[in-house]
Image (cartoon, rainbow, N blue to C red; front, side, top):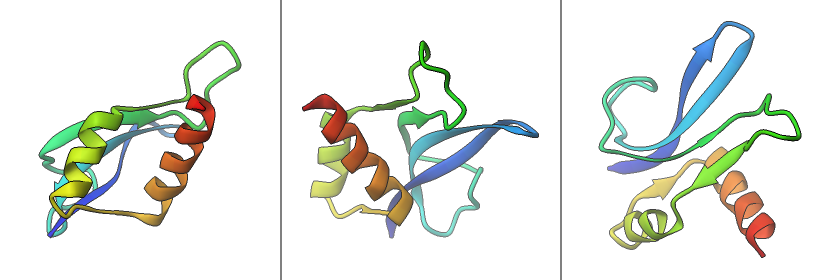
Length: 83
């Protein structure tokens, strides 16, 4: 099964997450199929905190990829910000 989930990066105390498409059996920060965007929870007002490639997200959801609950929340947040 293919899932859309977060992959953690950054250093200790300064998290940074990539939104990736990966096989469910692969570890969280391991190999992935495609990077769809990023989420920076510690972004300041002048920095971009969330970016998602909507066209690729739509494609992966159309072929059956399931997104994690956290990614679902971020997708809704990005849609509200874009509107």
